[in-house]
Amino acid sequence: MTMEPRRFDRLGETLYEAVLPNGLRLAVVPKPQFASCYAVFAADYGGAHRSFTVNGQRCDTPAGVAHYLEHKMFDMPGGDSAMDLLCANGADPNAFTSSSMTAYYFVCTEKFEENLRLLLHFVSTPYFTEETVQKERGIIAQEILMGEDDPGIRHYYELLRMLYARHPVRDQVAGTVESIEAITPETLYTCHRAFYSPGNMALCVEGPVDPERVLAIAAEVLGAEPGAAPAVDFGEEESLLPVESFRLLEMPVSAPQFIIGAKFRPEKSGKALLRQRLVSQLALRALLGASSPFYTELYARGLLNRDYSYEAEYAAGVGTVLVGGETSDPQAVLAALNEAVAGVRAGGLDEKRFERARRASYGSRLRAFEDFESVCLSAAAGLFRGYCAMEAPELLAGITKTECEAFLCETLAPERLAMAVMQAGKE
Image 1 (cartoon, rainbow, N blue to C red):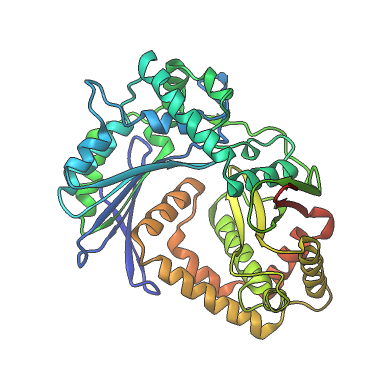
Image 2: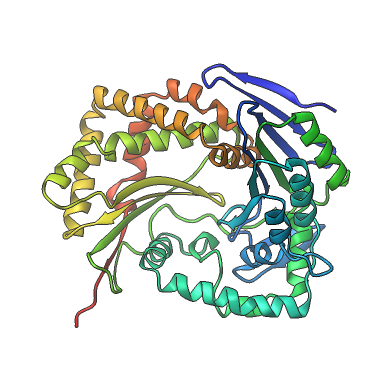
C-alpha cells in the first residue's frame, strides 16, 4: 500500500494519510526544508476510559490506570529504559496522558528512523513486574499529592465536579492515592491489550521525512494484527444543568481566582465535530476575547487582568466551556458574563467584531501550523474522531454569525453556569 497525498493550498502543506491493514491510522507532513523531525504515537485512551468491554468481557478499572501505564511503558525487558535509549540517540522524548488520549513522542535532528523504530517498539511491548509497578506507586502518589496542592489543578477539578455528577472526566487523570493502590501488573496488561492495539492508535510525523518510509517502518514493527476494538462506557448521559452552581474554596492564593463553566453536547465525530469545535472557539473569541467589550470593560474597572483565559474543551465525549482568571469581585464578573450573553440573545453579535474575531482565529490557526507538535497532536485527535485538522481554515471561512450566536445563547444560559471561587483562608 502507499500513502495518499492531500494538498491544502491555503496552508501550503501536503498531508499524506493511510490506514494500515492492522488498523493503525497514519499521517505524515513532509517538511524537507527543516532539520527537526517530530513523531507522536498516540492511543485513543485516557484517564476517563475506565469502564470498557473488549472481546465480550466487561472491565472496570480504578482511576489513574492510563497515567500509570504511561509511566511504566518506558520500561523495557532486560532493564533498559526507552527514555534513556532515545536520549542517547539524540532525541528529546516525553509522554503525557489527558482525559482522552495518551501520547508518546520525540523530536530529533538525526537518527529519525532508528528513533521511530524504538518509539513504536517500546509503546507496543508491555513489560511490567510486581516490583517495578510497586516502585512506581510511590512516585505517582507524590505526583498526585503535588497536584492536590496546586491551586490551579485543584480549582479546575472542583469546577468539573460541580458540573458532572458521574462522568469520569470529573476525576483527576492520575487518580487518587487510594485508587492507584488497586493497580497491578495484570491491570496494566489488560488495559494495554485493550487500548494499545494498532487499530486504536495513530502515528503522526512531521519533518524532513519520506512518508513511504514511515509507513514501511510502522508496518514492519507493528505487524498485521489489528487487535480487538474496545467499547468504552462513560456512563449514562448527564443533564446539561450543573450539579452545583457555586462553590467557595480556600487555598493560599495571592488573589481570588474564579472559574465559570458550562456543559454542552459535542457532535459524535467527523466534519460535524470539527465544525462545532471551530464554532465554539470563534463564538467565545467574539464574546470574550481580548478586544471584546466584556474583557476591555472589566479590565478598565480592575475586575480582570492578563491572568484570564477562556476555552471550549472537548474530552472523552463531553464538551465544557471554561472561563477563568483573577478578580476581586467574582460575582461582578459572572453578572457581566450573563449581561453579555443577554445582549447576544437580544441583538446578536456585532458584525464587525465577529469578522475581526474570525480573522484573529484564522491567524492563530496559521501560527499553530508552524509548530510541529501542535500539527501532530491535532492530527492525532482528528484521526481518532474522524476529521482532518488541516481542513479547519477552509471550514472557518464558512462559519456564520448565527451559528456562533446559537452556541453562546444555548451553552451560556444562566441556569447552565457553575462558578468555583478560590480565595485565601482567613488567618
